Image (tube, rainbow over all chains, first blue to last red; front, side, top):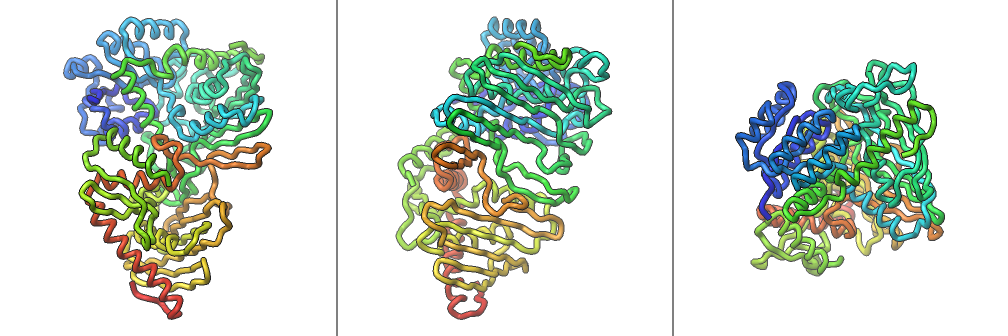
Length: 358
Length: 242
C-alpha cells in the first residue's frame, strides 16, 4: 500500500510528541511537513530533530507541499474549525484531536465540511486500540459478567497546562469563557476537557448512550489556574447501567515547559482504571499496567516507567485503511457527538448543582 | 505453541512492514535448552531465538540504564519460578538476561542446585554481581512468577511494583468460576499467549535485522555452556569461570 503523505499542524497538543515518534516510524506514513502555531511551538519542535521542514503558516506549508494527503491537527481546541476548513478546502484527510469543539454549532459545521469534501475525519481516541480494552470488550461480549450493573472508571493524570498552556485558558480549551457556576472564580475548560476517553469507552462497552449525569467540582489542587482540575461525574446510561467517573488532574507535576523525565511527582502520572460489575461477575482492569518501576534520575522519586504503550499503531492503521479504502472510521464526528454532549452536560450539572439530561 | 498460527502472524507482520527476508518458526531441535522454538530462514539457516530480548519490560529496564535514569549499576537480582520439567531453560533465560541488562559478559558463576531448583551468584566482566533464583518446581498450571531488579548507585529499577511478591495483571475477573487474570500487551498479536507473542516478535526482529542471526547463535552457544558451568559449579562446590 502506498504510504500516506502526512503533515502535522500547530504542534501544541499534548499528544504531539507521540505523533513525532509514530510519524517517523510507521511505514504506512510519509511525513512530509509540519507547521507550528507559533515560534515557541517551532522551537520545541526543533528540539526533537525530526528532519521534517516546519513552517509558521499552514497556507505556506500546503503551498510548498501540494502532495499532502492527510493532516494531524494537533492544536488548541479553539483552532480546530479553522484548521479543518483549511484541510477540507484542499481535500486533505483529518486526524482530529480528541475534542473537535464544544460548540454544538461549530460541531455541526465540521460534520458538514467533512461530508461535503468527502474526506476522512477520524477522532483520536486511542484507547480503542489498547490491548487491555480489547480484552475487556471480549469479556463483556462473552456474557460471562451477565447484564452490566455498574461501571467505575478513572482517567486521572497530572496537569499538562505548564507545557501546553492553552489547556489552562478557557477560551482555547473550552472555546469560550464560561464560569463553572455562580460565585466560582473558575471557568470551564480544565481536566474534564482533557479526558473524554472514559466517556467514549462506556458507550462502546455497553452499547448504550447516556441518560443523565450529575457532576461536581472540588477545590483546585492548583489554585493558580483558571480552570477546574478536580471533578467527578456519576449518572446512568439509557440501559440502566450506573457509572462513576473521575477525570481529574489529581496527580501533581513539576511545572516543566517541555515534558521530560521527572515530570511526575506522583509515581504514576496517568491512569485509566476500570471496574465493571455485572449480575454474574466483576472485572477490574488497569489499561496501562503492569509496567516497570524505578527511583532514578532526575529526582530520585519512585516512578512508573510506562512499558506497553502502542495505541498509536492501531490508530494509524485504521486511519490509513480508511483513507486508502474509503471507509468511515469507528470514531468519526457523528459517533463522537454524544460524548461531547455528555461533557457539556457535566458542566451544566456543575453549574446548576443538579443532574443534567444528556 | 500454535506454530501454524504463529507463522501466519509472522507473515502478516512481514507484509505490513514490508520486510523482505523470509523464515519460518519451527520447534527447537531436541537437546536445545533455550527457547522452545527457533527460526528457520529461507536458505535453511537456523537462528536461535532470544525472545526475552524483545520483551518490552526488559527493553524498558535496559532503556533506564542506557538513558542514564539509573547511574552506576552494581547488582542485578533475578528470580524465575515456574512449572517445568527441567531447570535448564530457566537458567538459560536468566543468564542471558544478566548479560543483556548488565551490559557485560558473564565471567564466572557459583551455583547451588537441588532437584528442580538452583541459586546462582554471577560475576559480570565489569565487576557487577547478579543473583539468580530459579525453580522449575511450581505445581502444574501455576502461573509463572519472575522478578528482575537492577540496583544502582542512583536508583533501583524493577519489573515488579513495590510491596508485591507476585506479578500484577492488567485485568482481574471474578465470577462464579473463580478468579481469572489477563495481561494483554500487544494489540497486533492479540489472542496469542505471551510466550508465543515474544517468539513471533523475536523471529520478526531477526527477519528485520539479519545481523541478529550470527549474534544470537553465538549467544546461544555461550549461554548453553554457562548453564553447563552452573551444574558443574554445584558438583565442584566452587565458582567456575565462564
